[in-house]
Length: 244
Length: 393
Image: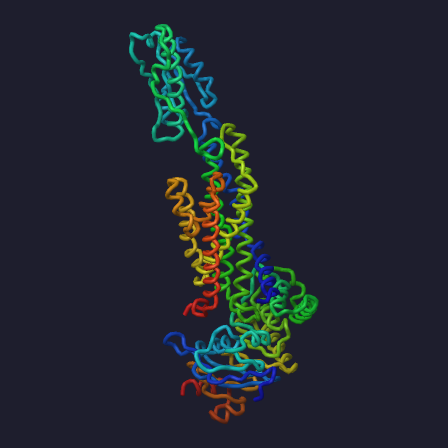
């Protein structure tokens, strides 16, 4: 995998919290126009991996290059080029959707006129335009999640790190978000998606790494994983790999 | 340092703060409404000038008219006359009156020189401040009446009243403000010091521990802004809010002082020179910065708003107590505090208000306050860099 402006290359990434090895020498790579899934049970190390890739946590060992920049030595360059959706939406209840997008746009050094234009576009795209000046505190979970998703897109980054993007959403909201993620893939963005939802992984991901206890058990396309495990469904593949 | 990032954080934090009711209550309602009421109400309630003591008198005959006239002439006393059949003790016990006084028959005759002292039955409750105040006022009237009798008797014998006071004092005041003891001098540095600690307290908890609890901090950390820029943006808003709270508290204080002056015309006023106001302004800025940095440093360890509140409450209480105790210390002890953290600012403000601030005190007080502020801010920034602290593992 070349170190292009929209690639993620992870090598021996490790994170130790005291006695706990949360991520143990994880390695994978993904490029533009690909949705790469990190599939694992709760506590497998998915969120910690994403936190290291978005430079919130420092790796204990190993490193990664995100959008061509090293997460250890060029964290700011990395942060300029990623759109992150954390596990929790992380929204300010007293701010409106427009306030949120303006805030994060300014932190990405975007000019005010571009922020305004992108805000209109994104709010229209997720159907939040009519609530643009309402405080987020009164929003439903689905509306909050949609806003958190478009917050990650405000600066139109080449790489997306999405942690459980449809977690807790109703069918319709989850579907809308998935369609949006697929549209990003079509635009040639590189997307790392962490999930424990088999259906979602099956529907969205081009390649998948099964992660458990901080280690990657297998990586490949769904077809490759089927061959490797001699199981048909992703759920069976997953169970086989994590129980081995 | 990218100032656009700092400005974006500052702008967002300001909007978030002004929409937060807790911040507004601690920053506006408390200093402008609650504090003046807390200051004014006890003084009003306890002051016989504003709220005269309720005294009931049973006058057995008209021989005590001159004494009664002196009682009724005192504006601090509201005198009611009861009949001898009424139960005065019960009425004082029940709080109908704060003091009951019985003026016996043949009052003047009983005051004749051959009869010795006349003991007037005064019924009151020494455990009540208001009742004790009423007794002091009655005693003062009685002392004045006694003095007039003694003066008359001495005059009849051709003696001067001064022979009863062989020693008096010639008072030489070293106070540099008119009027000597002034309640405003006690309150002003204390309240300003307190506001440097509590003015932005809720904002600081919300913007550190609150951000962690809501998981908004994690999102912020994925932005291109550096952690120093994040700290600086938040810090600047905290300082701004603290200064606004302090300015509002001073305005509330000034209004209270004016109201009190109207109610208690004899109460001392406090006129501050432009230099004193400037010194107070500089010290308040430094103290607010120090306290904001300290509070941010402490709160960033907390996982939730509630936890942050538990961390900060003892700190703000401690600094408030330190400020409250200052007036009870001697000048020598106060001088030793001129380089102590936080107290240096309070001492400089107190000395400025008392018009006794020396250039040396100003230099040491402000200089050390700036050093503490820089250290606190550096530590707060350092703590914010630590993922162990931010994610508490």
